[in-house]
Image 1 (spheres, rainbow, N blue to C red):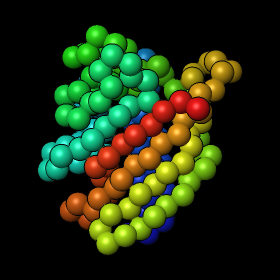
Image 2 (cartoon, rainbow, N blue to C red):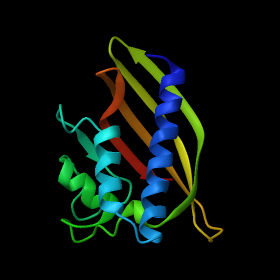
Image 3 (cartoon, helix red, strand yellow):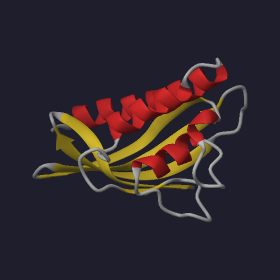
Image 4 (cartoon, rainbow, N blue to C red):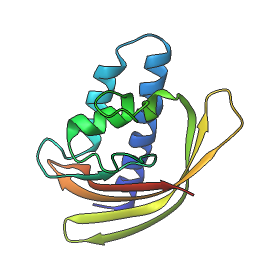
Length: 147
């Protein structure tokens, strides 16, 4: 694993969130897109995953694939309005620190989220613990919060 792999993974994660919102806006199958996004970026299919999304108050954690999908596109949890459905115009990585140890990598940084057609930005701090599974990185622990 390398820092280039982590940056590639983070770009794929950002693009995936934006893509879900774009597909939703265009009336496409955003649920299928979200399922692919979660399966591609999170280790739910093979491992236990801990997920503390950015904007949660009533149900703080989303530690299953179904609950993660609920956070991104709405569904199981009443407070979930669909984080990825906003839609986002741009998600910019502004700061990144990486620790590599054995087969684990930790990425911690900030992401600046710009909603489509709005000037307001939301700065979020994140920590991803990534594992290398089947020659691809996946999130095992995700913690994020607004700044």
